[in-house]
Length: 44
Image 1 (cartoon, one colour):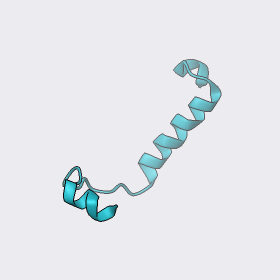
Image 2: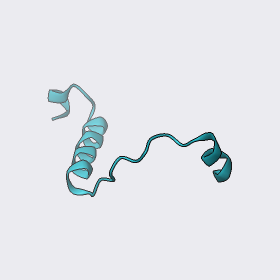
Image 3: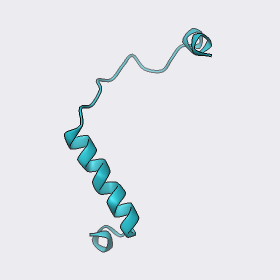
Image 4: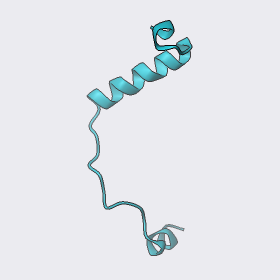
């Protein structure tokens, strides 16, 4: 599979795990976008 994808074996495993996670794990809905400056100050 790695050879067919043109990557090394480690990268092939990472790609497979990523695809599995996207398919099986719940995905969060998109939020309102980036934080405002006020929100960043509150976090800090």
